[in-house]
Length: 475
Ligand code: AMP
Ligand code: MG
Image 1 (cartoon, helix red, strand yellow):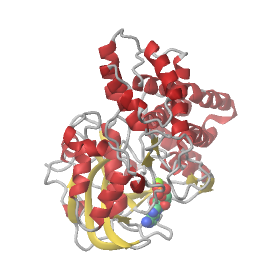
Image 2 (cartoon, helix red, strand yellow):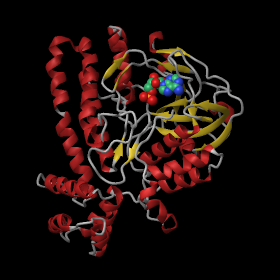
Image 3 (cartoon, helix red, strand yellow):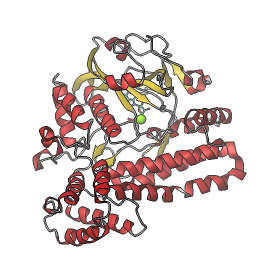
Image 4 (cartoon, rainbow, N blue to C red):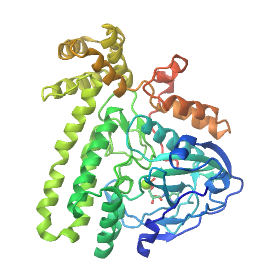
């Protein structure tokens, strides 16, 4: 059966996109096809060949385009970004009726490529595949990876590395920067068209631009709180990398923290720590303010107070979601206002000692089961402050509903995250044509909350010589 495409974005007015075929590549070869995601989308195993996934053939029903957007990159506005190395094939309608963009990333130059080659190297494709699928398994809204293929061509970055294409699936690829594109061109009609389109596609119960804005604010507050609950640092929260649908998108120099510190930055291009771990809520709000700005032509002067009210709710929405996320991590079933101090205190104690974020929380889960907190305690060189906190936490998580607390913690505290040193290892192997480590890592991360003894090594933090201090765009 052919894939069920219905390409609504490609029916928008011409300034939204440019028709664009992928550039042919030498020798497409499948690395990994995500069969379970394909099944969810009603895509059969023969419907997408390596040739199609690399862009050499176009599946029936696709309407390949490159979409237009702008963006604030590290605070500076670039009016002309757009899909410079990605092509949207179209929207796949799943058997359950849901609509998802299918995009090829790394599929050649477009009118938005500027000086870029429109290509992706295998390292970037594998990083995005692993991390986006891990995020999904961690119950965090994200774009997904449908397939990774090699192109048979080499891509020149710092060195020449094998080229690859990621087939990416998203609720849509509309970004804050998509609104900014039309705002910068003073194209009010396009802003209205885009708003109507986003409301219909993503927020059908929203009432106009302000209702839409309020819902985008809510989804972003939730998303960033969820990131922080697993120690995730996006790394490039530019407005062009913020999805209107509230999904994590555009995995570049992203990373999960090993040792906790709120100021952690991995991205080598983030010199001033703009996108540091604890800055993420502030930046999300800054980006949302840019979105709000683009809606002013639609709501007029009279609408500005309502826009401000919507933006002013961000801090409370974020704080509430953060309390829920960390409450669950600590087994607090119904977080109370006083619990904020308990959360803040453990984070401070962790930061002071730089303990492993993921391990501390899994050890706390075990400690509630066994009554023995020695593994958690052993993470601290000097456990005195931790002991004080532990006492307070134990008083709070009394025996009442202990099993429910343990279950909540087990579902909030992953055993396995995509640790940087593991990603590095699988990327190095893939660069020399060995995909087995990549495939095993995907298998481990597909069930991040289930402890499996055969994968014990994946739960461990890096040894000192394995620590990765910086991640590079390396696209
Ligand atoms: P990013 O922040 O990495 O998502 O990319 C920012 C902008 O640069 C987007 O418009 C991308 O399409 C463009 N871009 C990144 N890498 C390339 C490349 N290799 N070729 C062409 N455009 C690129
Ligand atoms: Mg981007």
